[in-house]
Image (tube, rainbow, N blue to C red; front, side, top):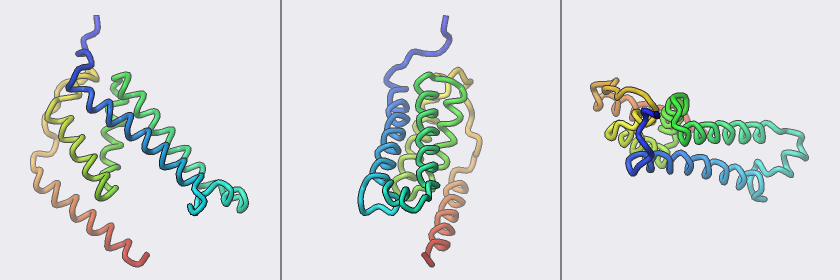
Length: 149
């Protein structure tokens, strides 16, 4: 007998976000590789024999597909990879930050880890205002570093 709860209305938004992130990543990669005005268009990469962006897109899409499969199969490694992906998505200001923060708060508020066979975790960081201040400082530092470009 499976000790994990069935997929219900609480887990469904997490599954939709995981599938959505994988599909958006794949669509963006196709756009960058096919659109003629893109600096990463496949014909230009082939002409210059510079395939590093193509390898990057393949790696990112493979990682997102693995995360999606892990979340949909409700495995522990899928949960941990999904949380890691959400933390990396925090730096995709402003849209990625909004998606990541709302998904992470939903996961914590509804104790979604129980769907992955994990015990309900307590809040690891007990000072959310300090965490928000540190994240804001990192975003400001990133924007300041990008000003010369």
